[in-house]
Image (cartoon, rainbow, N blue to C red):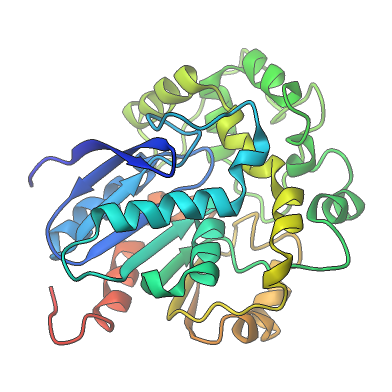
Length: 328
């Protein structure tokens, strides 16, 4: 197969690194934390081989994308990130291609929901992984709610204080931080008590999940060694700011054709009431064009890397429905 191409695209005041492969209808892949464009390597090659143009950026604060002020978490709201993505779509969509397909995971899914909420005119159809739509609760800020529910050791609460968790990550080392997150398979919320981290000794051998090679880990580690983790952690630190600036979309619906996929061992499926939200019908109420919810058995958070063949087929089968008369 032809080689993945890399380019820099000036969007919304930053320089966004983008990986690209294939020709045809554009699919925008949006990664999460602690991920990069690289998290989509299996999907990029597969969907390109099926006649799509796969476009996967490093989000602001990640990887080889530059220009975002990582010292200021307020510059990482969904309005900023969706602004980046809309500008990227405008810059890279093909002639006459007003809408593109979108796939998101983790924070990428969070941003994809926001993209579809703010600019549904830009999206043909959406496949989101792991993180369901998160409707705004006008009565309480997200971090306040998480602290009340899970306490101060809950990982998102722990990530709030700038510099604190970065200092602990520095002690643990980049590879150990990454594998600690990638290895997490408990169907329960993640807690990171101070000084204990992922519960292993800093000297313990690093064990890789079955779906991650040493070369994969080395690529991730090389990029986070260069950038640090602050850019990615800013997405967590802007949750309350997001809440403040998105009041106009309270009770708003995502009106884009959608497929949602999650593993039954995923921490996101087993915390913050996500399972009940999905099963109760409220998810479908907030996303009225939600066509399918797939729960993968025995699969954890990084499902697109753990089960790439299954995820690839789900994406391909769903997007084929929205191609009109032309089918790759």
